[in-house]
Amino acid sequence: MKARKAMLISLAAVSLLFVPLLVSTSQHENHLALAQKAVTGENKPLSDTSDNVQVDFEVPKTIYANELTTIKMKITDEESGAPLSHVDWAIAVKDPFGNIIYKTTTAHSHSGQMDINVAFPTAGENTISVTSSSIGDKMMGMDVPGMAKTHTVLSGDLMEGWKTDPSNDFGTRTYEFPITVLSEKQVNTIKTSEGDMLNFEMATTSNQIVAGQPTTLVFTLTNAEDGSMITHPDMQLKVRVGSFVTSKSAPVEGMMGMNGIYHGHTGVMTHTAVFPRPGLYLLNADLNSLPVSNILFGQASTRFVLQVADSSSSASVVSAQSAPGPNTVNIVGIEAPFFAPNSINVKAGTTLTFDNVDGNMHTVTSVKSGTTEPDGRFDSGLMKAGDTFSVKLDKPGTYEYFCAIHIGMKGTVNVS
Ligand SMILES: [Cu+2]
Image (cartoon, rainbow, N blue to C red; front, side, top):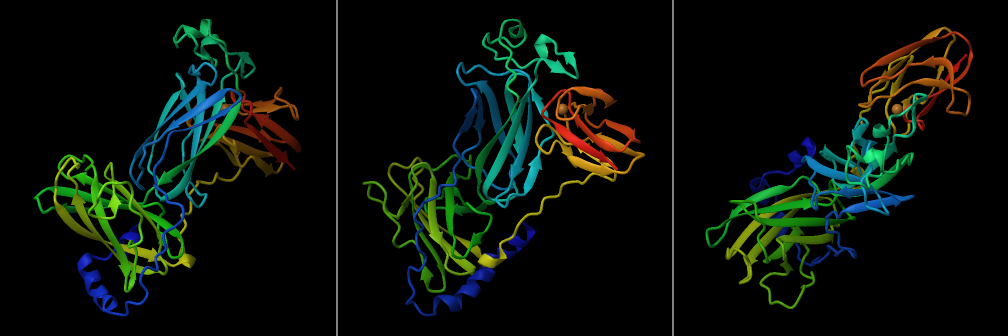
């Protein structure tokens, strides 16, 4: 982010830079084509269902990069709408380049509801992958008490419901949800002709504006005093570099006579354009209020500088995931790969350590090949977050193991 900020040169310096450009030829007007599909950059509630298990996902409409964002999740029985009790969750967030930029340790919800707070570093389409896992009849070969199992809480009573509600051992499901993240916003505080103070915010739907690729600019006009939206503002927008000018052909929406060419009923206005070549663009916005606006602010003008990158220099974020030490297997949770590395080769006589780097309890229990039946060769017992378990493996062979709580978590040790 540092590099990007550094490129947003102060307005004064850029004004100087633009003078020679603006007086050059004017024969290439309107080279910024309007993209066919307008992108609003807004998120809607999402849900996904498999075999009657439903995960609902509630995200803020507008998410800006590097701002702490609360995401609410709910897991219910689709048919009845009843919440599911005692569900384990793991959450991984991938940036637009597919790098994992955030990963929760496994968490546990008692009432089928989870909140996470995450700051997305990169604008664009991020993906949140949610893995949920039920607690069934058996844990570590022992019967799970009724109140600790996953139930469909039809009774509406979490504490007493387990006696009457059906248990719901749905196994493990993974759901993927796309999340649109806008770039970090730039804010200009402007004084209007009526003396009102407004905040004019600009963000883009991708991490950076790339030449030749459609980009949506999202503008939000708010009252600087209390942050509330200015309704029904009009905007005349000009984006230009040298003689290239956009916005002349933007469509006029609705029937109402307008001062500008962009109209925001709620204070949000978008403009999708393809920037033809890399460089600095100057964005000039002339704002007007209408008689129906909640604040009759008169007129105001403001400018932003846009940095458009070359298509060949798109940056990508490299994820930093800690690698386990030698002869160590990290227990990473209910989402594949459950153990890292999931398959490990060691020499006979090696002491292998399992490190529970997850936030939930797990076990490392050896099983008969291809089954979930413990064979007694090793068993860690219950491992809390941060616990380690070591085992010396003298005999060559293949050792399969699983987690006796989350029976889908399987790994292999090859001893040679
Ligand atoms: Cu486990």
